[in-house]
Structures are given as C-alpha cells and as structure tokens.
Image (cartoon, rainbow, N blue to C red; front, side, top):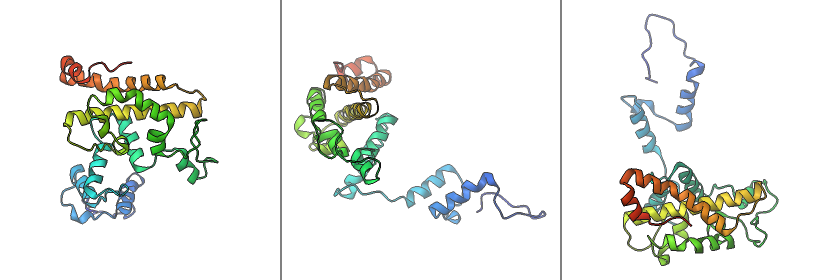
Length: 237
C-alpha cells in the first residue's frame, strides 16, 4: 500500500497483523486508490475521501439548496447535540414511530399523545402536532426578534431555510432558537414515552429556554456580556 518501506534483506509476511486489519477494511470499504496519494497524511486522505463523497439528496430541493441544508445541519454555530438532532431530522433518521413502524419495532405509527391520532413523522413531531404548535406559538415572540413570523416556514424549522433577505447574525440566532425548541420537543416526547411523565407547554418552553442559555453564555464569553445582552435581550420565561 505504500504506507511503510519493506525490508529487502529479511523474510516478509504479506498478511497484515491484527492491529492493521482496520486499514485493509478501510481500503476495501472505500474503494480507496492508495496510488493516487503521493504523500500520506491525515489531510491528504481526508481530501481524497471528500473528492469521492457524494452528497445525499433532500426531497425535491436543487443541489445548491441541498448543500446549504447540510451545512446548516452541521453548522459550528450549533452544539454537538443540536447538530446531531438537526442531521437526524434532515436525514429522516430520527427514531420517531413512523420510522420504527417500518422496522417492526412498534405496533402502530401513530403519535403517542392521546389527543393526536396522526402518524408521528419528523415534520409531525416538530411542526404539525398540536402540542408542537402550542409550543411554537409561545416561542413566537422570541423567534420574531430575529426573523419575521411570515418568513418562518416548515422548511425553516426542519432545514433552516428562511425566505427573504436577512442578516447572517439573525439567521444564526434564529436557527439556534429553533434547534433549542426542537431539542425540548424531542426531550418532552421521550420523557412521555419512556418515563410516562407529560410536560406541559410552559415546561417545554422553559426547557427550550434553558437549552438556549448555552448559546447566550457562549456569545457572552466570546463577544462580551454587553454585546450578548444587546443581541439576545431577555431570553428567560
């Protein structure tokens, strides 16, 4: 493979030792052409992998928009937890009941809330469920500080796409708020299913605000308390 020189004056075993078996597996799974890399380094290997990478499509969106969607899902402005949640939501891999039902994990794909009989998909959980709608109405005042309510659509909540012209700072803050609310909705849903404890709308909103405080504190440390206060204002309930 060209990774290390071989001795010319001693017998050589062509079987890789066990601790290098993952290297062979890596080459096999990625159909990696090691001859194309002249200098072995983490950067050159990563660059070669990125050249082979194929971007997954998202619904009917054009390629340029899909690239922007994936950038939003892995935005460094989000915490690792929110990056994972955003990625799973875009990928359609969040373990909601509609997905679990297709894998024969649950007996029905319906929303677990008693007052809702619709199928629990990602968009239903975060957008169309009556509980989610009540939470978004309570959080609308905070979201509209940065993006007008008329510009916050279903695609905004799932993919981070905001129609109209907005500043990068406003989009960044609004996307952080949206993912904090989605985190609270997902936590409330799991708490109800696994611990049989149902959150009220107010409790879910307070949880979303507590998640958002991490971004406020990060901005305060990075930009200064006055700048963070001017940007976020009062973000508690």
